[in-house]
Image (cartoon, rainbow, N blue to C red; front, top):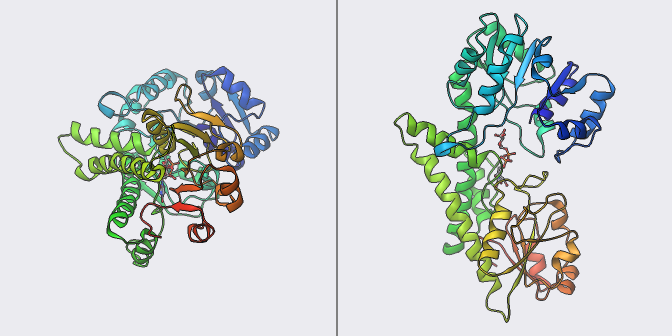
Length: 414
Ligand code: UGA
């Protein structure tokens, strides 16, 4: 998210230098070949480079020397026991301390465990430099829009004036600004992701319950969402949650709590529930395959963990493709932008037609719009038999079933 943050701040009129130690990546970005698929990002990068507001460097010491604000947007992958591995944050904080300008502010945007602002402050060891925690709530696929139209800005600080200076950088934002202490800000980030993951696990359990009880998950959710205390957002049933954030952050907050002598039962169970759901989804697909002669060909539409990104990290689509391959199916996949991980056994194809051809079952695993536009004729003419498992509710299942396509949706009865 460092590039999105840098490009968006440049778009707001700030002079930004983005620093990375990957020289190939830097060269790519400088020539406006953005290595990630993120709507609107290439435009912002090109525009900001042309206005001389955005530049790139591989030298942190040099880059921070004249900076009023230094944002740490470093990765914090899963480390030992699921805890966030903060080594990149520690290394950079230790490295830049002596180069910082007096009166500057170091802003931690990385997703970090509680007390990281204090750790960064110690490593920087500069009483004339403030450290502020400013977690981000950007979603992949809509990160630019989320940055420019945030629903809140959270700032954790000890030095309030430094906190307000950071808030002022988001000049165009019309949203509440929450100035709080650093530990609370760090906790808000993790708990927001844990809560959202729990919501998705909840709706997926409703889908499984409807599958066995005879209800209709969409009707049930419509009924629930009319209660404003529940609401309608972020409650779409699917193949389970994935991506680079929910899986690592739920495990990290649970591990952090355990190290403090506390079990977060609900968060632990959310992780278990997601795993169980993915198992049930595989079973549901196997029911759709039924018994057939020879090795069944299953085609997965979508590899990204959700639409709008080419990110396949912890993607439920990849997880279920791999599980089906391990169970002996021939597995083929198509995604408009994402690639199948190397050595996964998944045969990647590059058109919808190629994906559908001779498939015994098609599984819609990512909610790309184009999957909703597949015509009945395409299913009928290209597939060996038109059986479709729609895990993302993108098809008009009722209409398709009327014309002979066997569309199956977990938690909906037809
Ligand atoms: C998530 C949070 O939504 C962001 O607020 C946060 O900033 C970000 O993590 C982060 O920590 O960096 P993201 O991982 O991009 O954003 O993806 P989401 O849109 O939250 O979706 C996560 C997973 O839940 C996906 O697999 C998605 O398909 C699934 N999902 C989401 C559903 O199955 N149903 C829903 O209704 C919503």
